[in-house]
Length: 410
Image 1 (cartoon, rainbow, N blue to C red):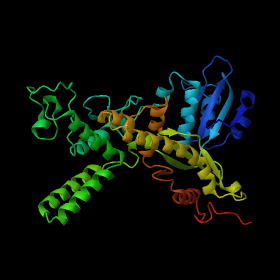
Image 2 (image 1 turned 45 degrees about the vertical axis):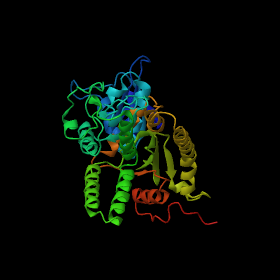
Image 3 (image 1 turned 180 degrees about the horizontal axis):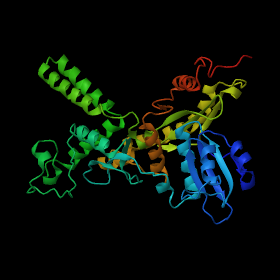
């Protein structure tokens, strides 16, 4: 937790010295009241000293502006080096002091996600803001519901799963919808396909989203190559058009959007301390305890910065990888089970911490902000340590990338 690591008692008789002792820097502060039952005042600010003066200074003329001079007893604060650190500190302390209303206090809203409800016999893909451990497939976060809808509209044109919200009864007399008339849906509503055929199409949707389109493009590439080798140029041209359509659909996919369980990244921000970087690890969409890289102290350490990062980041990730790999192997080995059940076991979200949606909201709010401070690096097969170290050098200033993380002389 990013604690409020500094504080002072407030004495109205010595308010001048009190204000001078406060740093004129950005941060998060908490004003405690004389009455133990009184609600504290929590806020973030671009200038801690100026904010305290506004709330605690003796007003020169009567005013309706909030003034806590008569009731405040102490100030606790944290100087922050970035807006993201400030947002995380505010969230943590709002949750601690206002457990019933902290979401509205910091205007926290769950991010827009794509959801495939795998418990439904005929799943569909749609936009939602609710995230639950209901064995569904969640993909995101997106900047807004509008951007999620825009991506889903183009992406779902590549497949033939349903988009209607009706209850599927498989009635041959049902007229169907416009998508089935345009051959853009397998039409399970009037038994236009078998359950197995629909499950296969759902599997293609899940695999394509899970790989950010790579699996689909690879299969199309192999198909195009096979058609060219067979001198079937018309088919090869048709597949090529399909590839172009896939690229067009994926063009609007933000880099951060991925399956929630695989949203593993590090966010780098410059800290308030000199020559210090804060690393915010993201594991499965959840923010973990921040890592402080104090380069002024690390110069005398016998280990490199990369070794320190490996020690902090690798153990938990290795455990998560092993669990995911074991689940995949178990699913692949159970061919006797239904395909829909295999989809739930491989892609379904079965464990969602209460704060998952809140952390995703904080991350998405920062990622889509303009301008955005700091840098983010995603973990694919491994952490990009060299790129992380070079980013630390950029954030700290003129230091050479080769100097950061290098072993000190013996």
